[in-house]
Length: 306
Image (tube, rainbow, N blue to C red; front, top):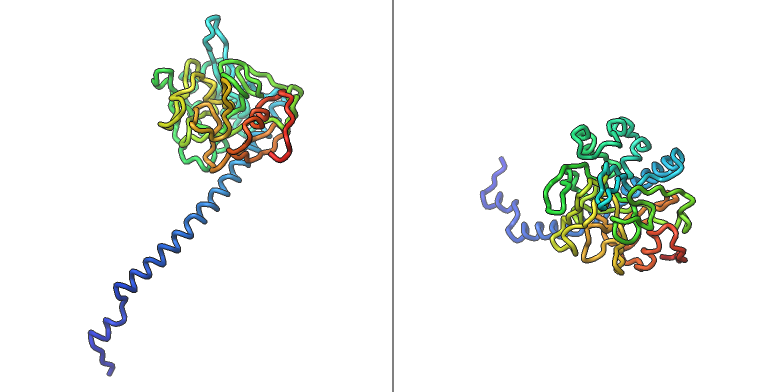
């Protein structure tokens, strides 16, 4: 018959010091493991984001093959007083048939404005291809006027067309702007040296939508420390620029401006070139080189190692 005492049984447990040591070891291991897991996850997200842009690039080229021009940045009539009358549908909306969204495309009457009640379903349709996996905010966006009042809601996007440089109310020197009809032959600088699409992070900067530019809307920043509270251009919902008034805004520019390119990925962002290739541009890129990349016929000489 085996006999044991309570004292002997108690020796089989952990002492407080041993327990604290184990907890400390586990904490150190978790501290080492979590950054590695996050790094792997971000690498996978960045790769998925690049693939999204490649698919968008293919759609742009298919659109060009079908129409002999790239889609307009957005379509809008301009009234004599300079205000836009819509309808406002953007470049990604025109690409819907080429990203397997034919039914959604057919639900849109491109002659009628975005805010028309008939487009309630279409303008709020979320499309996974248009979302970067590193941006966790997939909620509908509030499209606001210059006073901050909500005009309507629309589906989000993380990919915006390249306007070029300058105020987005005017024609840009990039491939996309109001009523643009850019042809492949117009990209004099070469499609491999011209940016067509870039990223904008909702939680790091401001909203964007695949739907288009609602007339008389203004893009408000989602970041309290932004350089400007809102961008005075409805175009900024679908387009991005490289700055204006003598200041070049590189990716992830500080202080952030709502109309800029800003990525959820650290240290830079993904960009689609006119030839369909995708490249990660660091936010430390030379401003003059970035300025050259956003124009279609600036005539600049761009080094290979930028």
